Length: 136
Ligand code: UDP
Ligand code: MG
Image 1 (cartoon, helix red, strand yellow):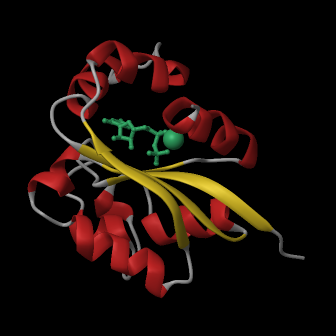
Image 2 (image 1 turned 90 degrees about the vertical axis):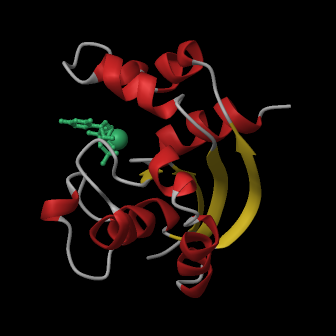
């Protein structure tokens, strides 16, 4: 069973800084994702703290929020059958060292914190995250 879903993808500061934005977008398109919405923005640290609130008790939370707000990011709504899971598979493991060949994090990730992309981890969170960035 497959169904059309939308998921939130972010090209993180390390990848935007290395001018990988177009290359990564091509990977999504070649895998059949439609980019329904996109914008390049820089967020404030307090917005990053809201976005990553689920991680607020983690030791890496403060650095993570500083990092996400450290430079421009590209936020996108991706659409495809089973988009949430397929995007997670295409991204690869959180730590690029553990990511499979052919994944975005394997190809571009620098480290567990500078891992080039974000993707929603469930359909429910995808809705929340899309609203976070694209609610009018
Ligand atoms: N992260 C980190 N150190 C860790 C675990 C995670 O810096 O030990 C960062 C990393 O950038 C990751 C983000 O926190 O992408 C969110 O963590 P999560 O476990 O949700 O990983 P993801 O869903 O991005 O694979
Ligand atoms: Mg996550």
